[in-house]
Length: 463
Ligand SMILES: [Zn+2]
Ligand SMILES: [Zn+2]
Image (cartoon, rainbow, N blue to C red; front, top):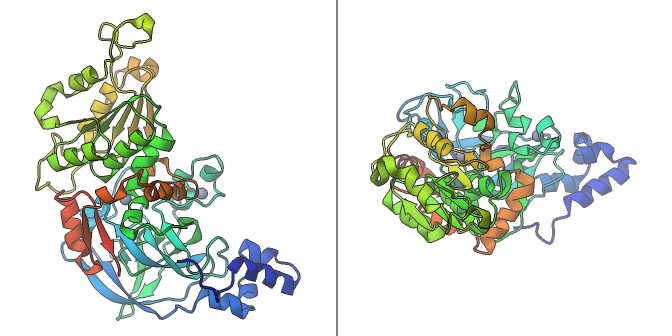
């Protein structure tokens, strides 16, 4: 947890160092490696971690059996780098294909960061986790050794075009062109340099990242539950709570009840939705949706072509008396006020109930068709290649608002600390969504469970 009694506040060190050299701007703004190195206490704070050995799942090349457990040697850190001892990381469905060797890199997901990784590069996959800061580079000012932190899937630098205009969920540190260089952080026994996916990784005892990817959290909540927040949980919560906030008393439909959809169900509940209609082919997931807040759970296979009409009928309201404030007059404009799409395409064929459309395109099309005038469509799933079509008149004048939801519109520093509070209060039930836990050496088994959809969320825990 936080720094021990004997350790000194890093902020105090920086102030002291600044006073000693008679002008602290360089140190405080991060340009002062020399300044920090001039203070022995600062060295103590940064920690001497170079050469430290740690275990990691390393992926090299493409195909089955290209990911294996390796012992690595940490390279020296500098500048804005932060070393985090991983406590837990969640197994995101988006990297099932690469982990299991059934999808060639780079992942061509639309909206994903531009590929900047040689497929043959030795890489630690993953995109974030929860852990404890072990060391910081001399330019890091927001974090202290001992801080408990979340390393998020998307950074918030605070300075780029998107951050300053209030769209940190598109921070150009990761979505810029050209992408930031990938930094080697460790060596294998044969001297091969190892990098991490988008400079964050996760499936390793240590993550080495840059300070804009890290937010301190001050909590004793269980690590596996906090691991819901570095990607999928924040996506579902953000989609319903920040990007297009669900209005109290409104009707919400959630397509897909994996960890993103089940978090969206909870976000809608937290925001005070009237109805939350979950649409999901897997019975165990429908049951879980009802447990965490859905008011109705529908099986799209059983509903077939009647699915949208069933949902519209549920949302028609208690009366059709228009002048009494009702919206369902003569069948017009019925439907949910908010439609959350969290389906995506299948990377591998499920070993449980399969959905009606393995491409994920069908759910996107249905979300559009279902949305009434004045409604909101939030899309989060990563579908396979394909097109969604709209009637021109509705596209231009149908008053349907679409919100494309990268990480649910989450701003790392703004949103993660308050989502932690929701876990602490039990308002966001992260525990119910963590349905399987694995040690690092069983990471591939964890991804099989996630990929074949035999579990909802797998988390790799470190002891
Ligand atoms: Zn993810
Ligand atoms: Zn930024």
